[in-house]
Image (cartoon, rainbow, N blue to C red; front, top):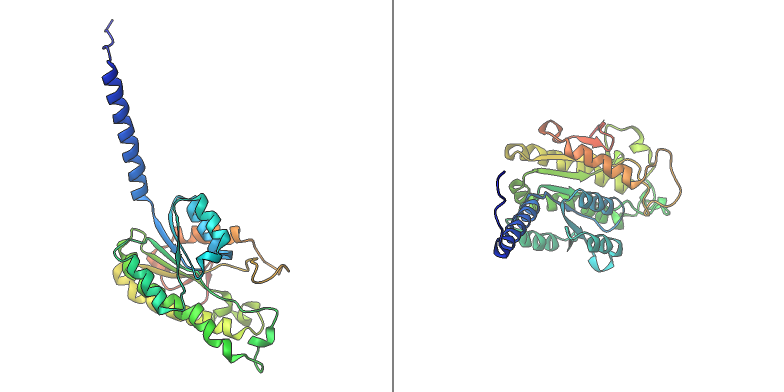
Length: 273
């Protein structure tokens, strides 16, 4: 029978310190290995659900919003998840985008999700119907839904190149698709449709330029999602945010360069541009 070596108190303490050191190193390694996603328009609806689900997956989430002080729900999510960082960003302001880009210069971002957007006031359909178009709101749609995402993509492109994921997405709509009949089933709504069609054109062009860098740029179509901006009345085919976002995350995980420049619905189906 082999005798068990006698362990002194010093040996036990030294062993405990070694175990603690290994545990700390393991935690630090896991933190270092965590993927990072930046999400615009994170304060509610689709953007907020993206934040929740990526945080639950263990990602570092850079959640941007125009008014962090008013983003109560987002602040609750951040308080419960140390991996969620809230940043101020107005996608319609070049200065705001440049300021945040300077703050994150040289820091890898694995996935950029251009989600910030506006749909318009569905209670005032004449505002976006031919013959009664309100041209005063035209620029709001274009800057928020199309030009803003393009500016953000350009500003954080080098960050994505440094990341392991190398993926850029933008949330679009069937309503902005030239290949879809009847504007995605939504009558009127000119400014929304025009701005989303412009977004599609912009991101398709970016996808072509990004291929040389191994960056996948694509568009996501979330389906008809029940969010507070659209109202409480349910429409045919309407789905909850959880279903839409979990579906889009699966699509993002599976993206390859063959998907560059295309529109993919939350259920994996390709949609005409």
